[in-house]
Length: 167
Image (cartoon, rainbow, N blue to C red; front, top):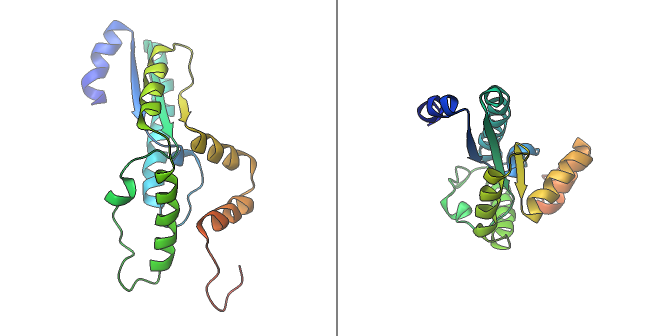
């Protein structure tokens, strides 16, 4: 898509590239959910690089980063840790945590409004966190140590150490 639109944007010396990612791309990943978060991190750093590359051409880049919003993400998600996997209980706990966040999340209109606002603002940031949950998680990731973030995830997800080990 970028290859298709960038020549015209460069010739006009204006335009806005909008990537819809997730705040999950800018925080440490809990277990099981890493593949989703890694893909969002990739989109986040792509947005960073594009913003620097395209600014001299008058093209702005915005990366919209929602937190929890009511979507069918858990219903659509692949669940490779099913069956007799030693990760099944952990998988179930993480999916329950994500599902709880999504169920209690905001309405999609808030994300749509953030996209429109980000495009309209010439002076906005590249990264646009959307929703209270996303902003809260981003703040935690920026202020907690790695060990504290791990403990937070363990508490939120309800992770306990396997029998015979210590936490």
